[in-house]
Length: 247
Image (cartoon, rainbow, N blue to C red; front, side, top):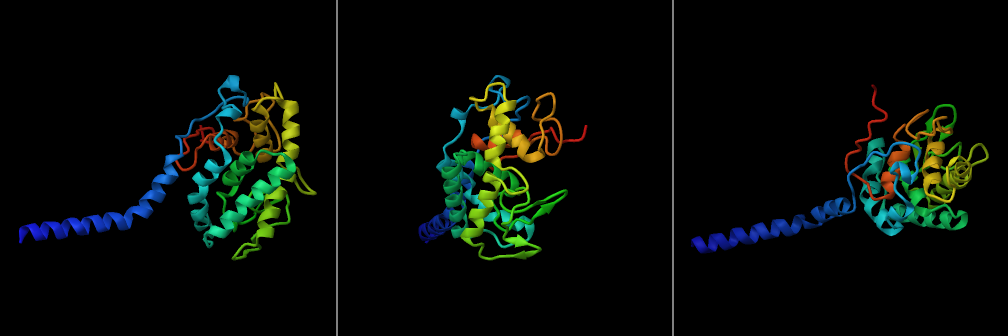
């Protein structure tokens, strides 16, 4: 009788473990590609310790590592979370716009995750200018949450336009494509990875501090460091950057 009870208990335990496996696997998958955050300081050059482009993860791995966050990120705005189709449409749009503009698809993805965590129904922020959509671009026309009227599902055409507005720019402001060119003139060596990190600072604040330090100046001081971390595989580990903390 004791033996039968033991076997039954073991079977129940194995069943419980098997039932929980998909959730745990998904959780582990998210962390398997996520590195601990490392704060980068200075001008964005490799001599200052910033990661070279050869250190960036490939696009497929980077996108897969961010899928879990994309699938849950709209909850922070009290909106319906992304569907698998919407996440697939984000990927397709990034690849398409990258192909048309020659802006590295990983750089576009890093900005998407930095600005909206990949939520297609992210609200528009507005200070001096409206910043809508996945990339919180400069006065763009595309949004799936305009005037507190969310679209569900978010059309693929709208997602495509959000990515285009952020990467190509709008009639009122530049996108990553233009900012990368502008950043090349500010980088010590435009042929190196430095101009990506300078462009990230320009995308966030519009300016670079006269010192050249990407952690100084206006807006989010950790922005370029965050982008660099995303490009080398950081997703969900704690953000330990202290550049925006009050002294």
